[in-house]
Length: 568
Image 1 (cartoon, helix red, strand yellow):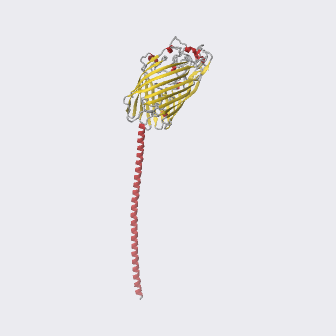
Image 2 (cartoon, rainbow, N blue to C red):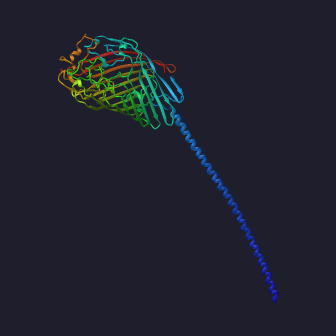
């Protein structure tokens, strides 16, 4: 092959090779372009997927917020329903179906209460007191009224009142109680069977309940020392079982009226009470209450008038009338303390069939010097007392037991049979201590009949005793306080001088027993209920021994008949 042929062949080969290479490059570019297109498409799908994921997450967050809001709304609705249906200390239901005697005003429920009573009383010995008397008025043979019986009928036990209970507002509920009876009139009007329908305030208090378990009570209501319990309602209905709460409305008082059992009183004091629920069945309470005291004892007749105290329960010589800090006239119940009563109590119900409580009190008695009495000492005495009680449903709805004890300077904190304080020869107040024990057994044969058996006793101790004659005798329970050389025998000697003749010696022991059937002869939910309450009662009062060791006693039988109509 010549040179020109070789060159031509080479040129052809290069052209063919270049064409093939160009074709290969074009195919690769197309592949790359296709892959780029595919990747771009996938990126678009990824963006859409990311957007979809974000949309779903947003929807899930919105649904979670709605679920949380719905849960909170349901919890709030449940709380409102629970608050509306919950009662504290027997209060009426709020925002619920109204019962007889209830009126709803806005978010407040008004509950009317009370009863109308007709009564009659017969005593073996004349006490010259109202239809519901007490053993401290039991006369001795020296008194003319001891030799006559007594029949009495008067209206004071009739009561009327109302209470209010609001709905919870921002976890706060407000309640109140107002009640009056007709006992403000004098015994003279009652003695003459005259008009004695004069209203007297029994309860006037407000209560603030917090959902956190704190409660605040202010006004006049039962003292914190009054025993609580889970008794059946006045119409025979089941108990609300709230005794542990230590709030007004859970107290138990003696039937057929307050303060009819030795050692177990039902005093109503002006107070400020704070209660904290510790658990669902335990509470702790503290109160600051008015300090009305009961003074008694002998002061020595050589320095003051020997006039007799004709109104005092213990019928002792009048305190130094020139010393206003002790008393004015013949009324020994004037407070001469400068500090209010400070009382605390704890209540616990392990089950609805058991209630336990214990209380303690801190008290002060203060004296100032009386110029006319030659008593130079000025001072204060700090003292106190304690008590405990239990209420047990031995057989639920059939048999209940209520028992209590007390010790200390607690006379006016229970029933006032034994005084709180006397004073010694120096003029300084001396606390009078006493012991109390009482019990009640209630049988419930059926809803329309309760049988109440009661017994109580309290015994005072000597205090501030000095002197060896009537002229120099001081203190409570002084043997020479009998007021004469013959001693206590004078109490047992009939006297016709006047109705005000009395024994000078102090009371040592008072005890009584009582039986009271409570028969609901008419019990209709639409028209109220009518109760018949007959009561048989025996009182015995014993004096301290005189200088000869003689401590006489006097007793009295009484029969009470009462009919009560409860319209609400």
